[in-house]
Image (cartoon, rainbow, N blue to C red):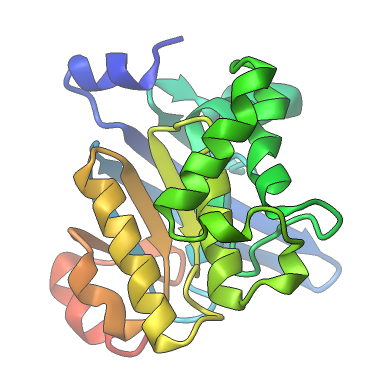
Length: 245
């Protein structure tokens, strides 16, 4: 297994998809959410996955994070063939190599904010117990909510909860952050602050991959990947299609 830094040093893409398909079957028939998607992303990119509703954005993000598995094709992140990993291996890989930020925050309501940020550290077990709370509080400080650490998630605003979710995604210092519509439930001012922080993370060397339908955040991205009907659209089609996303 090659780690992320080894993949970069070898000149390979940090993220690579080769002919990825995802097919869902039910009594109602067969639906192809992804149809042979191939793409590469390199370290430090702030990439947007855009497209109309039903284009495959969330499916693609779920496959990149190992939350879902492809029906066929190959998925490599940091040199790891995640399409070959079992569920337990995927959980360990995510804890070490991929931070995930969800639209609805997914903070555990019975834990304080600082305890939520500590969870990935507790799961992976790489950091000594005595330093985990300190790191969690440092991360909360970096996202501007150090004073909210001892509160329960329900006591925070939506923007504060999303910042806590970003801090949690950084707990084990992963090279890649995946975000699924992270500004979808935020007001425009808070969304701007969240996008600014993601941009700073990309500038520091993190790779950010974000699924979004928001048109007013385009200026933050270094790259846009347009999905249309489960396929990566041609670059010259991106302008017209994305405007409808």
